[in-house]
Image (cartoon, rainbow, N blue to C red; front, side, top):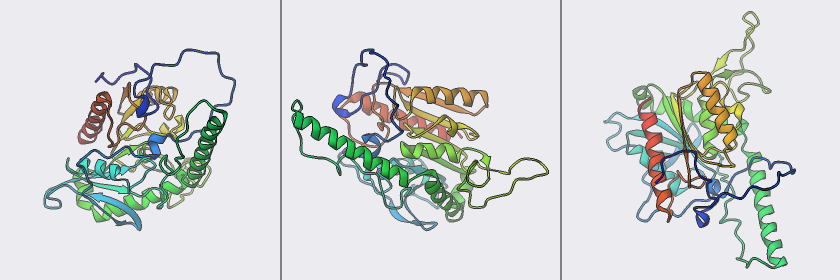
Length: 335
């Protein structure tokens, strides 16, 4: 495969795995679309033949979690890793296999249900009978299906904001420190990786921000601390993880990098509308100026969501999956 770099436009689906960039046209005057999720964030690829998950779903801190442990644990030392999923959630077999892969590398992997048993609507759930393009009726059906899908995704996103997700994560982190204290201690803290929807929350967990009431800082902080009037500054909390890695994150803004402290590795798809180039380059600039240890690799010729376990026919995408996993694994192992 080509080395990760800024080179060619990424495809929108496996059926269009290698696209040529669209020809330049007149500037659009329409209002940019609100942030949303692509099908790659909500719909699993076919599970590779012969693979199955090996962990278990249980409860931790009153939250449903998928847990995968390395062979020999607890007799063999391990580290603690949070894996934050895409929209298909902790019950996705592909996500579970992804967790198992990290477990074989010496991590107790905890993959929480970020969505309270409400995973994102996916393309399979919203599929309709195939139509032949060209006719007015067929065009109407396609547009209606696209509108319905967008509406369902928007409604789902409104139910799963940071104010809902972060309390789930703080519960799980507190429970991990108790239940897997040996693994947390062995690693000198908690490591974390995140894909698509989960990527943004790696950034939030890796940040130090003022612990203040809703309207600023961490509104999800379990204990709202008053401003120290004498010092004139609000107390701060975080970072809550030692190091993190993210792959094709979604719904990320430039502000999400403010306060970032923990080392972060970024797997990015070139020209990805879910993680725009201008946000990525602004983030790189912020991390460099604020001495945040980081690496950013941009992968050409791959779709958003490529780094999650799933079958592709294209050899370039298959090799990129391997390379992205190695990038993220190497980062957390070295930190």
